[in-house]
Length: 443
Image 1 (cartoon, helix red, strand yellow):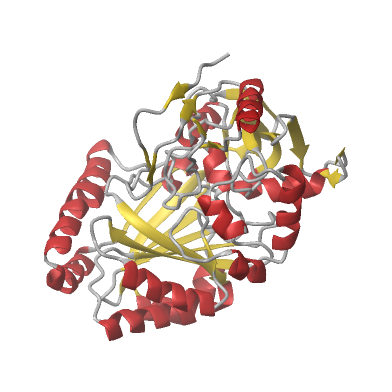
Image 2: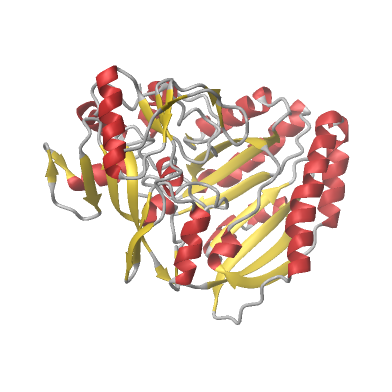
C-alpha cells in the first residue's frame, strides 16, 4: 500500500494561476489503492481529488484535503480489436505512442498531449471535428472509485443497475464528470486502424471565412483557425484523411516551424507585446504578412498535436454552431471599440453533438471560441467582455478554462444538469469529492 505524505510544497498548475497546499499527497497505483485513499479521507472528514497534469486553468482539481497524483496509475491494461484500456493517469502522448505501435489511433484528439487521459475526459477536452467528437465521445467504458470506496465499472450500452442508478446514466454522466461522481482509475477507448492526415496551413481573410463558414466546416473533416486581432487574417488549418504516402516535415523544417517560430520567436513576441502593448497591432500586422501556405501528410496524432511552450491564460466557450459568425463579428467589433491590444490569436474549432451530459457540445453542433493572453498580461476586462458575448449567445464555458459562470446559469444551458446534480447527491451526499470550484459550478 502506498504511503501518504504531508504536503510541503504548493501544487501549481501549468499556467501558474492556480495554487494550493493540500493537507496530504498520495500516489496510488491501482483502483484498490485509490479506494483505500477515498475511504480513509471520508473517515477523517477530508475531501479528496485526483489531479491530472495541471493543464486546467480553473481550480477544478484543487483540494485542501487529500491530493492524489496520477504518476503511478499509468500504462495499458489491455487492448483488442478496436479498443484499448489504459490506467487513468496515462499521458495522452504515451497512449498515442502505444496505439501507433499497435497500428491503431483515436478518431480525434485535442492539440495538447501532455494531459492525462482522465483529466482530458473529465474536463471535456474536445479538439475539432466535423464528424468525430472529443475524447469523451470515444470512451466506451469507465472504471471509477465511488465516494463510499466501491469500485464501479460502467460501459456504453450497459444494462446493470447500481443502487437504482441505471448503468447508461452513470456512464453518460461520468464521462465529463469533473471528478464529482468518482475518481476515474481506468478508461476504455474506441480505437480504429491508424490513418494519415493531410494538413494544409493557409492564411485566409477573416471576412472570407465568415462568408464561407458552412462550406469550410462541411467540406473538411477537421477545421481549426486562428484569427490575429487587429488584422483581417487567420491562419487556417485543414486536416483531412489521406491514402498517402506519408510526407511528414523534415527534421529541419519541423524544428524551424515548431520550435523556433511557433514557440521561441512567438514567446519573444508575446513578451515584447506585454511590455509594449501599443506595438501589438503593428506586430500582428507584420505576423499576418509573413504567414504562408504549407502542407504535409503524417500520422494522425502527429498532425492533431501542437507543441505549446509559451505559457498563457485562456477562456473558451462553446456556442451553437449557427451563431459562430455572429460571435466572431461581435468579438472583432468589441476589441476595436474598447481599443484593447490583443497579441494572442483567437482560436476557433467545431465539433458534432455529444451525448455526455456535461459535455459542452451536449445535444447540439458546437463551435468553440478560445481567447488567450500571455500569462503576465492583464486580462480581466478582455475576458469579461468575451464572456458577455458568449453568455448572450447561449455559450457553455469549457470546464478547465477561465470563466465566472455558476450553477444557476449552467442549470439553464445544460438539459441534463439537474439529472447530474441529483446523481451526485446520491453517489456523494457527503461531498467527499467536492472543492470550491465544484461548489460554484454545481451548487
